[in-house]
Length: 122
Image 1: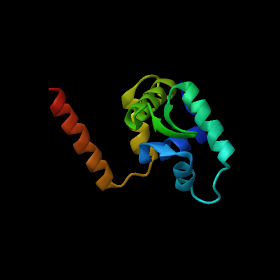
Image 2 (image 1 turned 90 degrees about the vertical axis):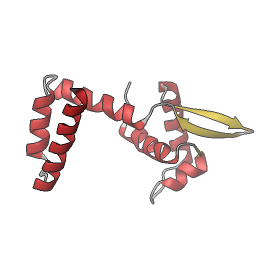
Image 3 (image 1 turned 120 degrees about the vertical axis):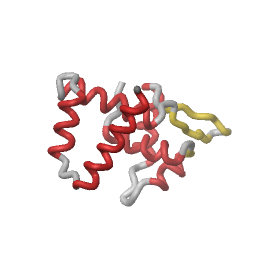
């Protein structure tokens, strides 16, 4: 299951806050802030999808994520690799490094990360 773009925006704030009441979420949005009813609808859909849950405090709900940001992002990237790069991580890496205008310094940092991961796996 995947989140829509607007649901992802809410989720980004929730991941950052870790837990939040509606007021906290609305405060996290830049101007112009979305309507309370819009955010409430998004939270309901995200709860139904299993991404968010809440604790009741009287009539107030404190929302918290059920899915870690790293887990969501990992699944998202793996889906991209599968659907757009024939399930080939090397095709993805080739595209990523050639089409994103990375500097030499950034490419060197990526190379270090890949080399460290190779050492871990040996």
